[in-house]
Image 1 (cartoon, rainbow, N blue to C red):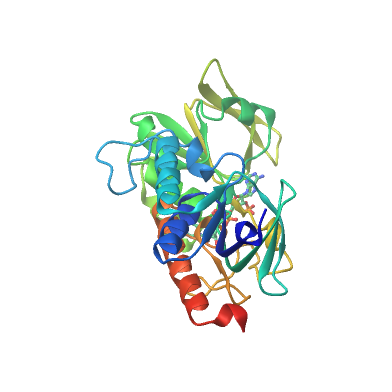
Image 2: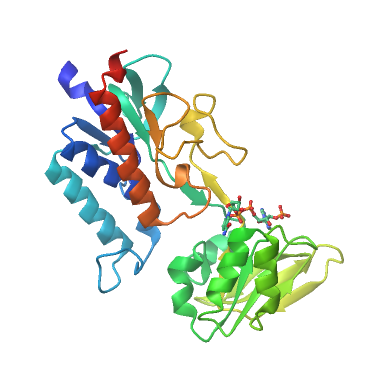
Length: 314
Ligand code: NAP
């Protein structure tokens, strides 16, 4: 491998909408661009059956198709896409050094971190069994399929509260199941929950088991104070117990907030000059593909400006 093959002006880590959009803008801005997308480029959207909130698609688009189009788009524009993961990152000197899972080393003048975040799961065997068969980690993605049905949301934070309210647009009834006797969600959201006749909040309960045949038909809840079991006949269960940003690579290297998200300014700049973060890895609030794409665009434009200003070599 020549030096030319291993050095890029902009290296992007992650292949969700943030990473791919960053690659579109980086290549069109004239930078030599590498995108490290892991073994299966595409990110969280690969698991989404139908997306109908990404602009430009009249009919719902399958997540894998959308990501495959983005991959083809960035390849056509000249980005070098590696089916390789970055396992080590040295941000202490410039050019930045990246170590790939394949064992190869790369350098870059600017780095865009777009490694995403994953919805947290309870981690129980029955949850795993019914994932995609009634158990979902994304109300925005899958809520539409529960028109007229009874569903439950697990969690007590803002996401769980918002998911519950969102689901009342489709479902006949939404149970919000929280492990404590008080929600963590904001006062305003709690007021909305209480005012919605379709919502029933069940405090002090955790899911003991998800059950059914081929698809979910009930959740057995355990009262954490008494141990009593209550059966909820629901065909959908939405897990909303927080997100885990994928920041293992930059722990101790970039400033992170208490939730582990990369701290950026409004221009996506991180605590290290020349390193930018985009998408769910820095988004504590929206976690939507279109927002990830927007921050990916910002990050690439800022990385281009950083290189253009000569700051990469100062
Ligand atoms: P979060 O605030 O961390 O809340 C997670 C919830 O899940 C908590 O209620 C927690 O219970 C519960 N939980 C965690 N692990 C659990 C488990 N193993 N079993 C059962 N329940 C469990 O996460 P989030 O709601 O995703 O919000 C993340 C951040 O985004 C927050 O800062 C939030 O304010 C922000 N956000 C804001 C908005 C908005 O402003 N509109 C919307 C969404 C998110 P405990 O309460 O007992 O810890």
